[in-house]
Image (cartoon, rainbow, N blue to C red; front, side, top):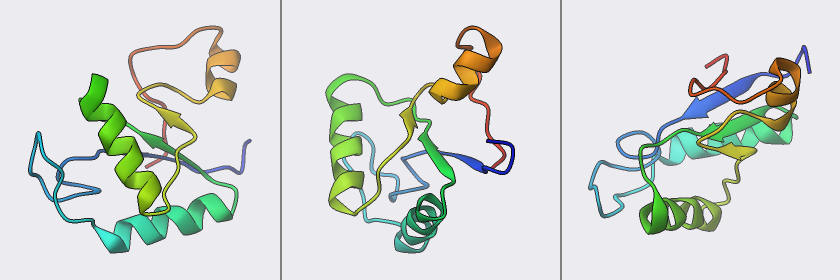
Length: 94
């Protein structure tokens, strides 16, 4: 995992136009970039304040646009294992 790049990305105002609690237009450039990074073996974490049904809708919206996540609002399993527990702070390179 030492060569793996971890990206943590917000939803409202980043992956989509800020229309909270609704969902705005997609940031296609960022979505395509993150998809290409995952295809290279890098990791993407959705790090958003959304919870419950609003979080579910955001994740589903991303999936419709072809973007999947390695974790949502938590650290990657391998990071948790390395530290022995999860923390409130998401570990990411970008």
